[in-house]
Image 1: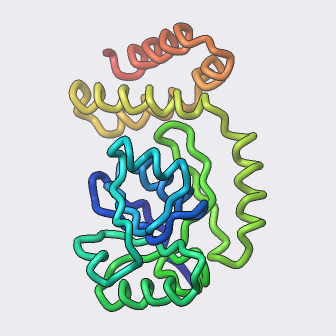
Image 2: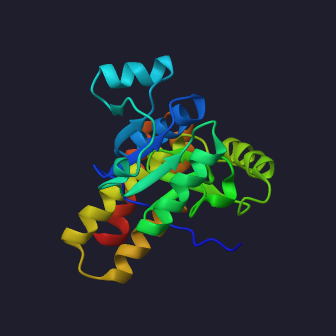
Length: 213
């Protein structure tokens, strides 16, 4: 199957996780990283999920799954250890037009979750369209070595420079030249070495050189 790659904005959107085990915990933590409003449907929870409920970070419906639990959901994850329940969740979601990911059997899913490398706002996703999760993990591990935390630091600075350029520079061509000059300079290497003030100084030099700011 050919999937359409997309990044979803789940900020404060209701996401339902059916199940309270380790898989549900892992999925929940990923949703929380996207600032989703997570509701867990399960009579029992892992200690970590129970702590999240106790702190008010997530909500729990301490019951077996019912169709009414899908009300208002933007996205659903079926992560119980009962395949029939997972299938039932998936079928209802498809009927209601709700995106659903099924831990098992995965072919019931309407979307799959790729292996991800995150460096701040930089997200690198790897997918084999479900054909080989092991290969996805292997490639992700290679990318983790290649793209260190300095890329997240660079992206933060590029975003700040971009905002400045949008306000002070009318030419799109010049704005692009400035950003490309920063990316192609030694800023990344300075950030990798922890020389943050030198990196910021170089960015200012390039801004003055290319945009006269």
